[in-house]
Image (spheres, one colour):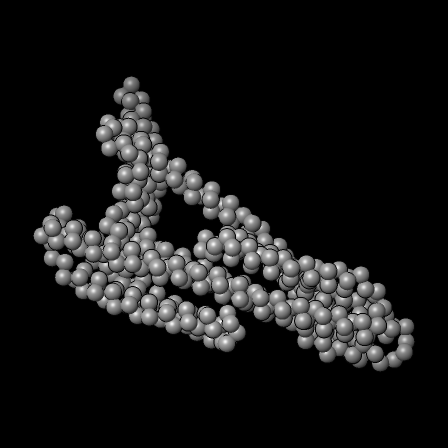
Length: 67
Length: 333
């Protein structure tokens, strides 16, 4: 009975490892493709930075009558 | 006794098994990734170690150590490069939050002041609060612009594509704008709570002008950064093409059918040729933008075309790698 439990634990361990290993190795993306993708991400980040100053509006204060 | 032995064996097995994913994770990229220059990242590691003649055990250790060291170095460099930018980003987010909250409050005060037409103390108080709200709105706007400029400064400083001279002149311009804006924000903050309508209008006009000027400069700086980034990516396509050729030649030597790979390579060359033509047009447009003949918006359209071109070449790179991996696997079998 103990032997069966131990064997069960070992099999579960192997199963868990077999699930983990493929996730840690990504062979589908070349570093060149990744380079272009990273470049796009960087360009998107710059676009977002450019739009930041659009958040500031002066209309809220421009049309106020202080009298 | 037997049971003890089995237990020890099991513990050992679990230990060994738990180490396996770590080994894969640390060498994962190097072992799995295929590059267009005809090598894998693992090949790079191998050639870098310079331990080809070492014993198998030492050789293996050297690869793991060098990969670890390389990854550590890259991580350190990325962290130090990103640190300033991440801190600036955080400060900007805080400033943006404050700006948004105060603006909401100001809108409410403005509404109360709009309907408060009496000459009562309560109305006087509301109007006084309105003036304070406007003053704070302008000061918060100034702070938000400054935080955004901090991010821009970090981007310029971290840029690997801009030359030192370009960085210096850009940072000089930004610093000047920052100084002017800081002085203006301080002036607004030190205004009296019961400042006159004229004083407030003057402050609004000055802050708006400063915002417009900074926005214009910021767009030019970001355009230059984007341009450098794109130029760099396009330049690398020559290497990618050479890598494809090397891979095809290598497989041909082994007697493998490379017709599909050659077709993808040919499509890739066509796309790169189009990309380079569009880049020339973008360069001409950039010169016109710099001399004020064209607007940044016009130039941005040329950049959008380049981005579309790059998406196409990226697709072809992916297709090539997939086909190459499939052909190589078949050949090895």
